[in-house]
Length: 227
Image (cartoon, rainbow, N blue to C red; front, side, top):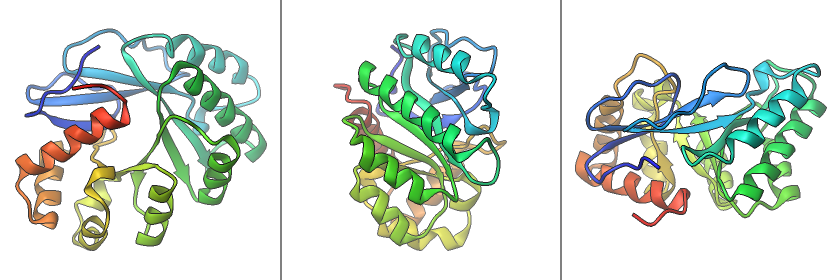
């Protein structure tokens, strides 16, 4: 398994990543894609069913692909999986598919990366109903302080939406949240993860090296790995 070093910038969620010196990338593969999570230096993978690409016809096949990929050491988490009330199939299909992925994650002792758009009540109900032993990471977060606190109170981690986190108005939220529950990402956009680290370290009034240390520690705790 490839793992980040203390001096690496950690990009916790991206797509179709290419190795980059000094950056450890967690590349998300969606189950409908024809991609294989191969061992590559500087990369690890998550694998899951994104609700946008789910339908009644492909559900069983995609679940099978998730179950197979969950066995691979290069796949360190499942997802992104979750709920989307703007785009995707019926809430019932999203719910059943999400729960199947959570069960696979629990069986394989792997955490889950969450996609959630305007369905926070659904996500929180699912967490209460399933009572997972493995942690969840909400990627692309751009909500308010109260929602963030509610998710964190359930043991979840947050990774901020790249466009939101670079704006001045995100600064107050960043300062109000525990650094021990924080990750940063680019989500495959043409954004440099180093610029995001620089902005967040300024918001927190700490050095980039200190921020790296927090996120490095969060990584090993979230994935339950001894550094």
